[in-house]
Image 1 (cartoon, rainbow, N blue to C red):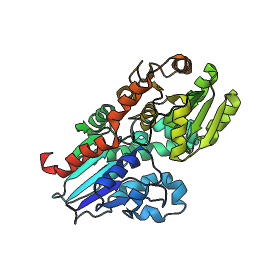
Image 2: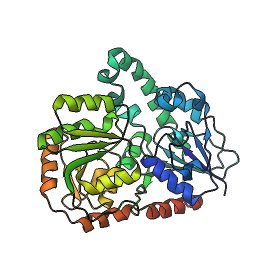
Image 3: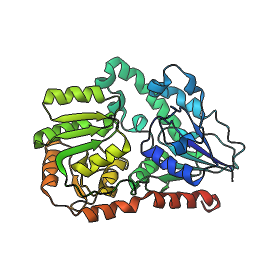
Length: 366
């Protein structure tokens, strides 16, 4: 079988790239297509496939400013040719699901989410407080056009597989399509408990983008009197550092750190925080694989990955006070490390690889 893999862009190892990595391991002879590839930003398993890129790859400052070329992505993704393949598998959170392929070539889309910024999170990304009144007004028709294109091309995939039941609901709402659910992979072999007792600090492992609501974690930890470490980078870092300094919170911004240091942080943290509404959320499960509890907003994918009172606490309301109270309670609660770890093992890489391989190898059964 000649297999084509498609990913929106390859600029770092986030949850979507970790799912792609497992598929690349299972199908090492596949060819990989992506809009933009920053060399060295993803794992050797993915790099080995030497991704084909679009014309966006050659635009000015693309490695740093690729998101600014968003209006060009629909045209770029439609330029790839899949005539010589037997099957296309896209891993999509933006436009990879909208590739154009011959009718004889089945297309399975592993959908991380319908694009948030074009549908229900415009203000978080392009609101007046972020771009100013003029910039926001200019972006609104652009994103409206992108949402229409996203909806109109929803039938280009033969089958949707969602990362959570929450995302399956978004696919139903925005694309009028049904989706089965295959939870993303968590490296439960790499992330594991150690014997050291936890230290009194909270941890956020996240891209620093608006919808992650890292500001809520900062303010909640200030109210709870708990030091916070933030691992990850992104366009919001400078604003978050200013916010932390102005609020007099005890926050250490670590930037992007290697996986072994992330594991050590999970193992040492008293609690890992998920303050935003996530489509799934890999970081909370990595923390749970290390035997550590999670405090998460009780919406979206967290309701499928955190067992309230057993592997952490779910917060009913997004306010700072409620989150601060949950952080304080979680630190004072004696959680069962083995039970937390056992729960996380349900989301292993092996399970993901087996489930996705079965779907990929049986397109006639769709």
